[in-house]
Each structure stands twice: as C-alpha cells, then as structure tokens.
View 1 (tube, helix red, strand yellow):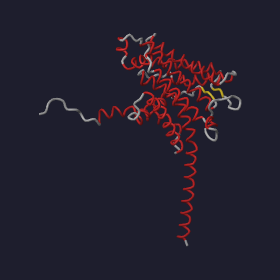
View 2: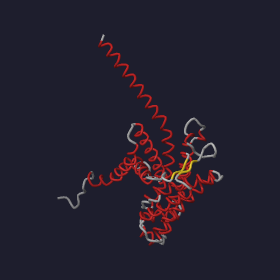
View 3: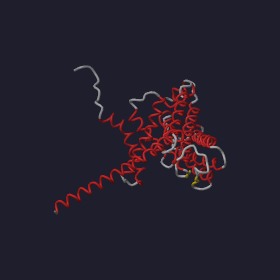
Length: 328
C-alpha cells in the first residue's frame, strides 16, 4: 500500500510539474511577439549604429543621448496637437541636429570622435530635460493617434499590427539607404570611412562626409526612439542608457550569423535588423528563465565583447601559419 501511494504521489507530482512547465512555455510564447516588435524598433537604431561603426569606422557615443531626444521630441509634439507623422519627422530632424553637433566637434574643432560623441551625449541630457520639462512624459494611446503601440502586437488587423508597421518602415529605410549609398555622394561617404587619405587625394571633402554620415545615423536613431516612445507609451530621460551596447550587439550578432550569407549592402542592413530581433528574443528567454534582470546590461556587454573578440581569436589561435619560401 505504501509503495502504491508513493507511486501515485510521484505521478501526480510529475503531472503538476509538467503542467507548470507547459504554462511557463505558453507564457514565453505569448511574450515573443512583443520581443519581436521591440527588436524591430531597436533594429532601426542598430542600422544607424551600423552606418557609423562599419561605414564611417567611428564609434559614435551620441547614440545614448539621441535615443532619448527622438522620443522626447515626438511625445512633446504629440502633446502639442501635431500629427504623429509631423512629430516623427521633427524627432528625426532633432536627431540629425545632434549628429551635426558631434560632426562639428569632430571635424571643425578637431576633437576625437569618441570624445565628441560623449560631449554631445552630455549636452543632450540637459536638452532632453528641457524638452520634456521633467524626467519623463507619458503619452496615452487613448487620447493620441499613435502609429505603434504595445497593445497592437496581438489580436488586431495586420495593417494595425506593430510588427507589420515597423517591418514596413525597415524595408523602406533599407531601400532608401541602398539607393543613397549607390549615388556619388553615398559612395564618397563609404570611401571616406574606408580610406580617408585616398579619398582626400581624390578630391572628396571627408569632413563633410563624416558630418553627413553622423547626421544620417543619429536621424535613424531618433526615428527609432520616436517609435519606441509610442510603443511603450512614454519618453524617459534614461531610455537611451546603454543603447550603443544594444546597437553593437545587434550589428555583431547579425554579422556573425548572416555575414557569410548576405553579401549585398541592403541585405547586410537587413541582417542588422535580424540581429536586433535575435538579441531581444534571447533577452526575453533569459528573463523567462528567471535570471536577475539587473544583470542584463552586463550580459549584453559580455555578448558584444565575445563576438568582437571572435575574429581576433580566429586569426591568432585557430589559423595555421603559412609557410614562406621554397621547398626544402
């Protein structure tokens, strides 16, 4: 009797654990659309980071400040009675002005690019507080006609779905960037990042190209911020903290997974967006596993560090040295 009761207890315990696991898996699956939507929104920011990091060969730390500026301008414009399209256009323009400031610091004043970005980022903190009037501003989806929203991720028509709308945004932006970087000006910008000395020898004004590249990059970051503020329903002065790490993680993950498949420039930009989606899917899985959320930034930093180190490790430790000279 004791053994039968014990077997019954164990089987019941096993069923309860199985049911609990199934509920947890269903919770994870239900959270995945939100992670995809957020990954797509941050993917626009990651494309902006890609332009400076890979095209201009500059680590632009303005991103952390611009990621708040775009959202702050968009929210305040909406609250002032402007349409969502005008608000997003104004946010993009504000981001481009931030990129212009960094470009002037770097080219006209001769400040190194990293320090120029830090200076602009510090200045933007005060500017963002002045724009919003306080540390954060909420925007109610019931009062304002928002383009994207957290509530529109599931159980809505596809043309209102946040994932569909942001995906269309990314496709259009990639098409525009692909066209632009095929023009003479765009090729000059790419040449500036590849070899500035040779570009100057060819008569290209590298300073103008650097400023233009920083303006385009920060404009995209601010556009992403405007979408993010609508999606989460508020703009906060700290919403851009660590944005450069997320952007770099998306770039590195996208290149590591899709780099050998995607060789076209447009597809490389698309791989960055995919990298951002994968980053947020992994992040959602980590949260689902119960890992302390205070450690997420540290995990992101470690992921970026490892992926950046992989090419170096391959060259130093896993590549066979080539023999030089004739046969002995």
